[in-house]
Every structure is written in C-alpha cells, then in structure tokens.
Image (cartoon, rainbow, N blue to C red; front, side, top):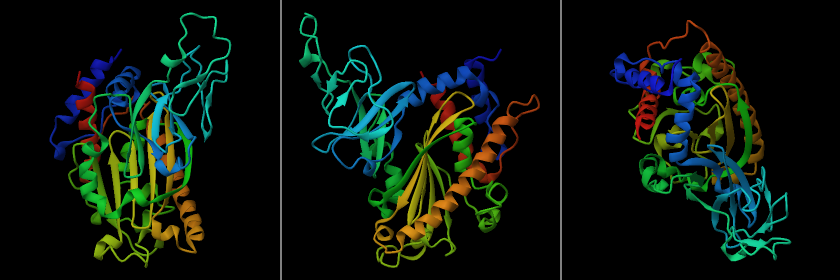
Length: 376
C-alpha cells in the first residue's frame, strides 16, 4: 500500500525532470488519502487562503464562514468596520456558532446562548454565576490572521507567515495598473465537484484545453499557436490573452481614459498558490477559491463582478447577465472535463503523460506542491 512518503517521493521524482521532458503529476498525488493529509498540514494550514471579496462584508455585523483543515472560522466586520477572523467555536461546550453568511448584532451560540461581541469578547453567559472557575473577562474567541489585499479577504492559520502584500508583491507589479481592489463583486456561489482540488486548479492554469473542452462556448476563439505561457513567480503562475470585441465587458469601458493600447483588451489568468484562481479583464473579473473535500471532492467558492466603469454604466446589469450565462456554461464544461479526469485516475492503466509547452504552469504548480509537502 502506497504511503504519503511514497507519494511525495513519486512527485519529487516527477518534477526533477527538465520542463521540456516533464510529465503530468503521478496518480498517487491525486488519489492517495495520506498524501491529502500531508497537503492539509503542510499547504492548507500554512498558506494564505481566500474567503472571497471584502466588499461582500460591507456593514458592521456582516459575516461569512469557512473551514480550513476542518477548523471552523468566521470572518466579519466589527462595529468599527475592522475586518476580523475568529474561531467559530463556542468557548463553553464547543458548538459551532455561525453558519453560512448573514448579519448579526452579536454572535449567539445556538446551544446554550452564550453571546459574543463582534470583537470576539464574551458578552453574556446565562447561569454561570455559581461556577468559581468562570471568568467572563478572560473568555474570548481566538483570533485568526486575516488581511485584506487588493479587495480580497485572505485568511491563514499560520501565525508566522509573511503578510499577503509581501508574499504577492509580484502580482501587484504585474496587474496593479488594473486596480483590482476597486472591482465590485456582483455574484458569489458555493459548489462541490467530484474531482481532486489539484485537477481543477491545473485546469484553470492552462488554456491548452480550451479548443476541445470549451468547443461549445469560448473554444472557437482560442488558437493554440497564439498562446504563450510565461515562466511564473514563486507564489503564483499566470498567462494572458488579448481579447477581441466578442465580449464587450472584457475590454476597457469607453469612459476609462487611463488604460492604453493592449492594456485595454488584455485578460490575465492568475493562479495564486495554492487555490485562488482569478480571471481579470479591464471590464470584469471572476474567480475560484478551492478547498479539498477528500481526495475526490473539491469545495468551490465561485464569484465575480465588474470594474467601476461598468458598474456605473446604465446597461451594466444587462451586459453582466449575458456574461454570467457564458461563465456558467464555461464552468459546466470545466466540470465535465475535470470530473472525467478524476474518473480516469481510478483506472489501473492511468499513468502520467508528457506535458505540452502550453502546460508550463502545471509543471510549476507541481514543483511548488512537491517543495511544500517535503518541507518539515
């Protein structure tokens, strides 16, 4: 039986080859449960992960929840407008406190009605006055590191990790001219697909699959000979495409006088390790934020929105409604392709094949994962 050590060794041997001789990741990197446990402890517990857009939490008391490595977390705006992340577990009998998204004046435990202020301090605890060990002032929900970066909410369990701004300064240098923090989210959904989280991440990272997988939507406008995959950065990889006017929202709005030349029609595809995938255009953005749910499942936060110029356009709602239909169709095609890969990985004949030059981001991603799971 293959262990996580065997799987990590197989991946290390896989990425030791030069890129022009590279192959896809070994089967065990996707299917081995012990290897996923290694990813959870050495990647997901030690990385900045995206909880969505900061403008989804506009008002005091707005909150959202997530789990990182089975750790329940709540992210909210406190009464002073500060973005906070805290443990979502009551300090009494350890019930989960909040679920989903919403707005609260206080956090109330659904089990015994202990209440917490929006800064995590204990506000009330019924019938505790006879317990000599109880101290209300000393009881508080543990804080979790949370930072806002370019309009994104980033959370980590690692108290020693470099700040997001420091870790992702190369992203700012690359696409900072688009002022991503000013874009406005117009939809946010949660899904679960029957595939491994890395299969979906890899699918986003390469456009080699576009002509075939997306033959019913955007594939016809994708020419393999025109695709370029530059070498990535330590914390992310990327590629970019120059768009025509078939999707007007992908271009800079006529009222935008800052962008010039190809800046007005360049679409960026950013894969920020481990699991934030952003498509950024001068007119709109959409994103996926991924969390594993077993080797064969991935939880997906799927959202998107518009640049400020298109938000102020009187026809913005009509334009985005049409774009959302397209994005949903593209996602459905991706789901079919990635779930078929997962099914194929169960075959006794499954083995990694050679990579195209258009799959450089996949090789860089595999190399990054191998370094992380090998680190102590």
